[in-house]
Length: 84
Image 1 (cartoon, rainbow, N blue to C red):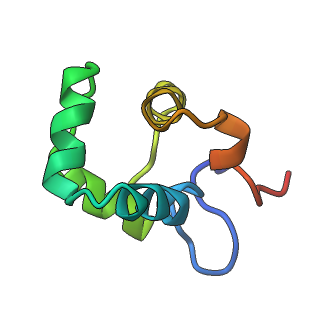
Image 2: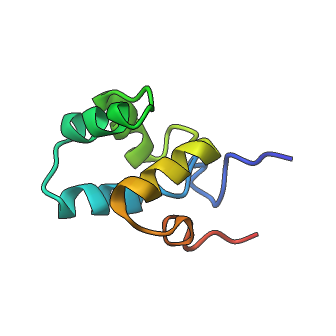
């Protein structure tokens, strides 16, 4: 079973669009967001943020939890639209 691709566009994550929305709402650059995530223990660069937002990078479950914590949103809101 493939757990990292969904839909017809073969994206590797389902949170990319929501991550971009949250980041731009805070008027943050990808580099600024990467720095904040690094402070929370993730090894992210601005390229990691870009690839995540584009859906070309798999996002681990613990990363989803950290993203939700940083933006003060639920993990459910990040995963909204996921069809099992």
